[in-house]
Length: 178
Figure 1 (cartoon, rainbow, N blue to C red):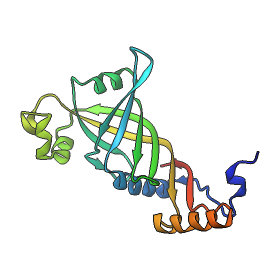
Figure 2 (cartoon, rainbow, N blue to C red; figure 1 turned 135 degrees about the horizontal axis):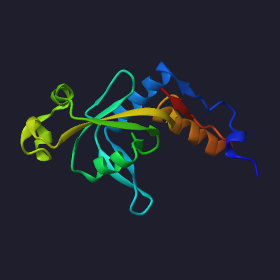
Figure 3 (cartoon, one colour; figure 1 turned 90 degrees about the vertical axis):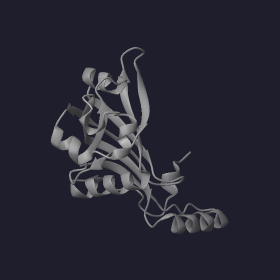
Figure 4 (cartoon, rainbow, N blue to C red; figure 1 turned 120 degrees about the vertical axis):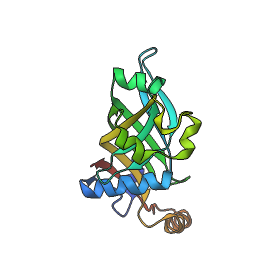
């Protein structure tokens, strides 16, 4: 049996490297608004996954988070700084998985830049809370799944394909390397 992609009349693969990759990371991350932040858990050899929102994504595609020094997440990163982020921007598109490395600092300037008063929920002493650390996730590589022309065009193409019994898929996917 042939893969569905062999029946695809148009190219639906495009690898994104450099600035084009960074731009797509920022676009999809904005659509998602939050991510699943996955670290290795030495206890069982599995991943520990938790929802997080990046406090900032810089021009190089690095994700910046504030995290508690005594959290399980920080303990996992101290053992192995390799992390995976999973993002989903909508029900049918805007998917992204990123693999990268995290560095942990207590840089006061970064804390000041990233601070949001709502974070006081987790850091009860405010931005002077001694438990605050800065996590900088630097993506090394990833993979994305998206639409070329938006969900409206994708839906029309799927309907036409279903009526004709042919594959008309507006999806686009590929490797991302910032």
